[in-house]
Length: 550
Image (cartoon, rainbow, N blue to C red):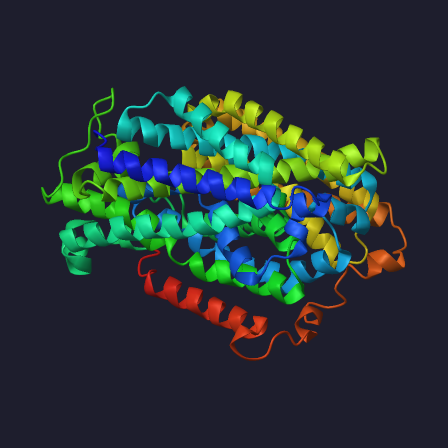
């Protein structure tokens, strides 16, 4: 696709706006900057900013491109990753956010030390830094490079380095305040571009009736039977998503850092619920465009996709193919800016997270009583190093069938031990420090071994050679790992019991209903009302889009 001067102007103006806004956010507090300003935005974030930032950090170019690819190939099945998220955001708002604010922590490993031990904190800090650099940033940079190559013919490494430099500049200068301000703007641009593309395609295909007539009806459903071509049967979603969802939305520093910067507990609760309502949209504006593209091609209203070297349609290019053939000059630039917004917001959020983790959880231990300005300097240095490591790793992310499956596979093998340790810590008073560390180490090692096997195709070959084990998708494996970790946690806690200190006792809910005793804001802003409406909305959507389970 050739880029017109107007499209190029729009893209350049976007870069100038975002980098300028991010640098301004950091420079305006430069003279009085403290560590809490750089890492936690001075704990001044309100619920709209938290909600928009949570969504923006979560949505990257991986989602725009890979969800469209999954929509073209498998219909709405992979929309489960979006529609299951509101349920775990409700868990964050009701059960985890109050403890995080009450504990007054800067990082989630910090919380883990207060509930368990220093050893658990150190292990989670290292694990979270690895996750931020190699999962959030590495996969996002690679996905962005694939898109820019498909749209404008830009060399992958050139686009990776360019994006890294531009994003790194304002993240280094501005810290979390720059990240959340730019993320709020980027969310609006992202949603505008994605809605625009979907609306144009939806009208051209003839609305819902035209789409339904052009595709297999099963592709319009989200929950699928065993053996479905999507490789995502309903039981794998129900078993595996709670494991990865609680890890990602409730215990992952890159995401939850926005909640840690909240003004108070009400903002920390309502912000995630606001993000949960926004998460309804991706199925319609990220997954559906791929399915619309397939319908338009089958109707002859869109040219066929270019072919892969193997001779099949190159489904990875469906998003750029739709942009090139449906959008006029000018609108292409807006959607291209939306793609870059998705990429840069995820990268900047993960960079700031890695810097916060290293500075608070590791460096402050090596060098106690480090002055705030020096801690900020260390954070900026870590941001730079983290970006360099992510740039070096990102080209290897193309080893998976799709980037989306690759990132979710990595998450499924990393998440179980962390999810078990946090859930046990918050809900079970007998969960002990030694059990926490044993579970984290054992679960991480098992997850790494399985990731290496999957990365090298061993698990895929095993499923092909032994069809009876075809149910072992990455989501099911994640559930099995979580069960193993839970067993380890229970056995080790009973084998190595410890009395709860007063501080630790305050970080365990006495009962599942205790978190709901806080009245919250009155009226429509009440967190209990919002959580109920969000849960009911998601159940209704699942009923509406689940007509074929088998």
